[in-house]
Length: 248
Image (cartoon, one colour):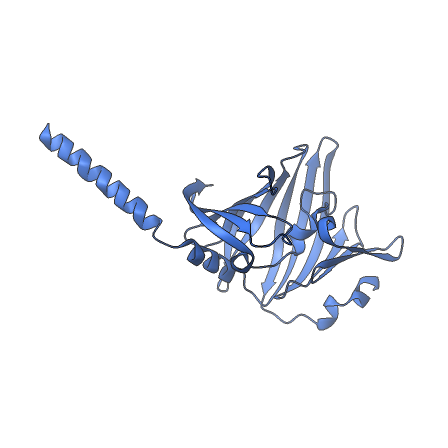
């Protein structure tokens, strides 16, 4: 009996020791390595955005150009919204509708509006701020997401200017890529949930190739995004990030 008790004690001590080692990394280091994984100078990609709701499925294809400071141009190339363009410059988003031949400017809370009728917002597809500078983090523990061991980190915005005041990120322990994210309102109510899959190694970065987003407030639809082509740290013409580009 003493041997059994001793064996159980050694086992639990070993498990506790491993648990402590897993959490020995600081939340700041996790956040820093997460940011580093997305610190590319430029990014070009082609992707499809598929929205499934009670009315059926709607799919759009788009191209996206992005540079390190967050400036982003999205061109919808196929689908019901084909021809529309979205340009993000600093904290403003400019929308171009070819039928109306006009440009609309969005700011502030309007960045939470839906893109292409999906569960993604303009902030989701064009925002590019690092979390270390914008949020305080708390390491809540570890959790398995889609077979991957992840750090579970709660982020609280440092200032009220952040559109998302609270986020819970599940960061892959091996790649430091995001596997899952839950966005909360300032009061703590869950607003949306995204999950990422098929992470590919591209150069020195770990990039997700497929993702799913659901608005938890309405729950009437689900949006899937699939990246079909991506290029990182390759030159992009300065003209791509000009308002003049929208009307061409």
